[in-house]
Length: 161
Image 1: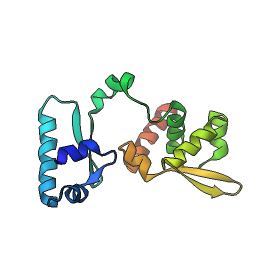
Image 2 (image 1 turned 180 degrees about the vertical axis):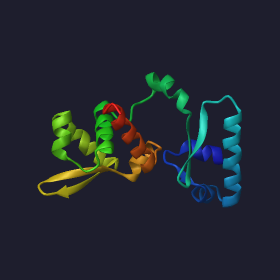
Image 3 (image 1 turned 90 degrees about the vertical axis):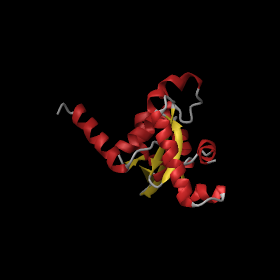
Image 4 (image 1 turned 45 degrees about the vertical axis):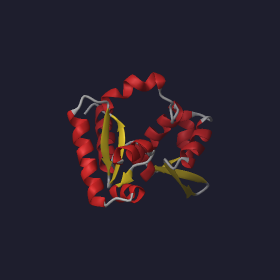
């Protein structure tokens, strides 16, 4: 039952959430999650259970991501993905920075990313500044410190260090 709930949900769920849905105890759900995690790890399967903070989600193992690209529906288009990367690497960038870098089509992409709660706009003088949100970190399954480390490493590589 726990496996079915994890399979069906789009968003990660806590053990308490799952217990509530199933009418089971939290401890029983935690044991089931641990058993499923072990089972997926020990079998030759494309699925895994990942922990995102205190929540759990069933997803495809990373090594299978490229294989399914031709048959998968893209949730985020290339422009939106590039904008997310830019904002993640340049927290506090202004709307003009994004439009200058990605063109006028970025205005609609910014609107979509704000609506999906990946970006948070903040009024700044006569414009907006952007930062990534908790939803961004959840969706991409990355922590803030991990993202900062990757951005720093990329910066070092680009600067020839």
